[in-house]
Length: 260
Image (cartoon, rainbow, N blue to C red; front, side, top):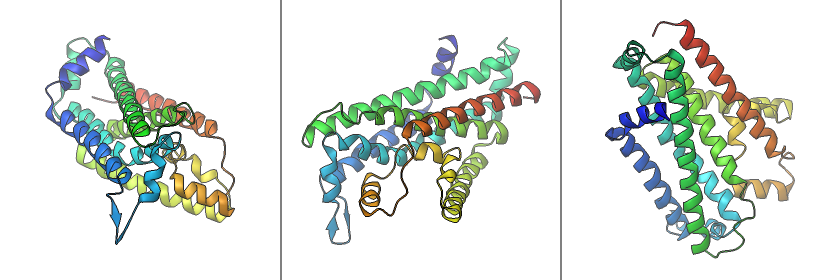
């Protein structure tokens, strides 16, 4: 709690935090409202077919997939937050004031955990509102997507944090993050197509991407028989958690052995 309070003292008047989280929340709501109300259009048509997916239980998977787009705002904030510690030498000041190196790491880990929980609760609340507003149904069906959203957020933010611990500059870290996303996507597709397997899905970020697939394409693939049989979601949960542990261990080793 002490480490969390230290992080909160930094954030409560930090405009970048409120701006990025505000953009994340506002755009997520507006985008879903646009689709749900058939206001988002492509050419002369609209996405009314998607608006039908806003009642329970489809709302969990549909809004979970859209949620995965907007997590990038939280990723950018984590990168900026950690890189600022190195840029303004506040991490060294913490050490001088008596904080252990691992306390600095744990403070960031707790911050990431808190943001992941908060974002997941936000997803849960907004999904409930949309689910009841667009037809209702059984809210307990397929609500395992709440867990998937949490794992997805935790994985992405933790990976971004690890990257920033090495690069230490916000601009470069953001560039490297997007570059990695592109490379991983290409690598995943090439491996899966060349080997006719799903082994490419077990790369660090793709493992959690598999938890929040595009519901419409997933359904069409299953009906057509063109898609491979999906692996159990619990497998991707386990792999994602394993990667998160690896991120922590690598960051821990980095901080203990390098000069701050």
